[in-house]
Image (cartoon, rainbow, N blue to C red; front, side, top):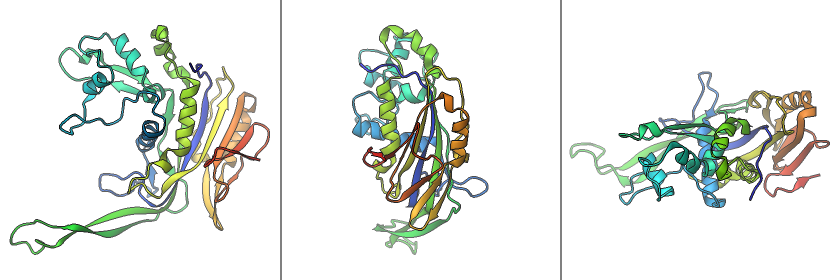
Length: 322
C-alpha cells in the first residue's frame, strides 16, 4: 500500500492552444475577461484530469464523472453514491460512513467535494471536503488574444416551417476558435486541508497518498493532450512546473500565473519563468525539488535553469533532459 503524502507543493500547468477552443462559454466562444484576455475555468482542466484517470489510470474509484441510467439520463448525486457503494443506502448510512466511502474515491481525495444530497431525511447527510489540490483559473499569457469564427455546413436540412425560405436547405452553423493561446494554471497541494477529516476515518487508512500524487503529476503532464475531442483538438499539455517543499515547511508561494510570460521566438515557444524562480529562491532552504516538464523540440524554458534542485524532463517521454 502506498505511503501518505505529507509535503506541500506549488506549480503551474501550461496548455498550448492552436486554432482551438479549450473552454467555451455558453455562446460557444472562448471565455474572455473584461479586458479581452482569454481564460479557462479550473473545471475544464479538472474534467480532463478525471477523464485521464478514468481512461488511463483506472485503478481507483472516481465519483464526479457522468454516469447514465438505462434511459440514458445522468445519475443524480445519491444514485452515483449508491452505484459506487451498492451495499449502502444514503438514507440509512451515518455521515462518518459516507465520509469514508467518498474519500476512497481518488478525485475526492485530491480535489475535495461538496456532497449535498437533496430529499427528505438525507439533506442532513451533507459533507463539504476542502481538497488538498487547488487549481486556479488558467489565463492566456501569450500577448495576443485573437479569436475568429467560421461557418460550418451541416449535412442535414433545416426542417423549418412549410413557408420558410430555409426549409429544405442545409443547416449552417459556426464555430469560434482562439488562433493561439498559452493558458497558465496555478496549482497548490496542501495535505493539511483534509487532515482533520482523514483523522476522523483513520481506522480505514484513508489519506492522500504518494501514489495519488504520482497519478496527479502524470495527469497534469498528459491529460489535455489525451483529451482529443473535436473542440479541444489543438490544445495540448505544453509544460508543467512542480515545486515540492520539504516536509513540515510552512512557506508559501504566490500564484505562478502572473509570474510566467510566454512569447514566440522563431519556431520555438519561449516560456519565461524568471519571476517564479526569484520567488522560489527566496525560500530555497525549504524547497526539496523543482521539476520542469516540457518538449525541448518546440519549447524553451527561461529562468528555471537545470542544476541543483532543478531538473528538466521531456513531457512526452518522462526522461530527464541533461
